Picture 1 (cartoon, rainbow, N blue to C red):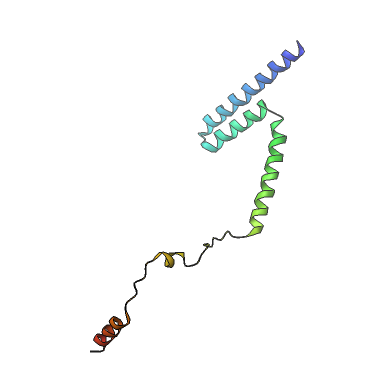
Picture 2 (cartoon, rainbow, N blue to C red; picture 1 turned 90 degrees about the vertical axis):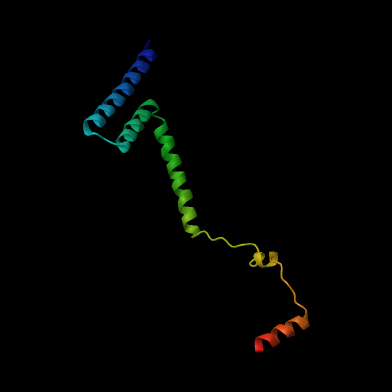
Length: 107
């Protein structure tokens, strides 16, 4: 009976938090941030143990982000610098044709 009563109290507390939060949002004419805050407090009431786990996950994520920031700016370098030039077909002219073109330019 005691366990059942504790569960009922927890559910009543959850409903109270949710209803009070929605009433506060309605009175204030709140936006997404306030609704998000209400839902977050509802979830904390629903799963009180998650707060500790979430804090640990947040700390781990902050450490990972600091590590990435310390590495510096991400730079990308192609494998081969002139890979596009190698793909371009080059046209080789015969030497006598090159001489004729040079002679025409001179005129």
